Image (tube, rainbow, N blue to C red):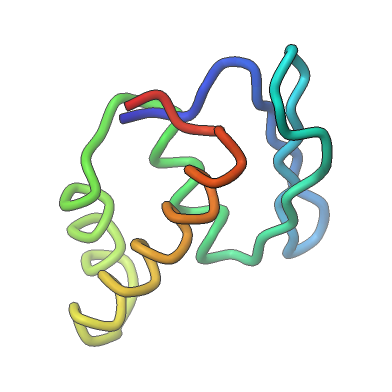
Length: 86
């Protein structure tokens, strides 16, 4: 899976904004924190949910099950707005 090319990101301070620039069904802005930004940045390349969890576990000191839940929640939002190519 990966982030669709028709979505761009911009980081301002500690907030990342995800904006559709193509003819997407979603017309709005998704605002995310550092955790969401890390996940979205991973999705700029072809990856898997498990690979994202592994990368976050290597970077953050948190229980794997909590990280996996966070990744799952962010991916659910990205799917809902049509931001992922799967």
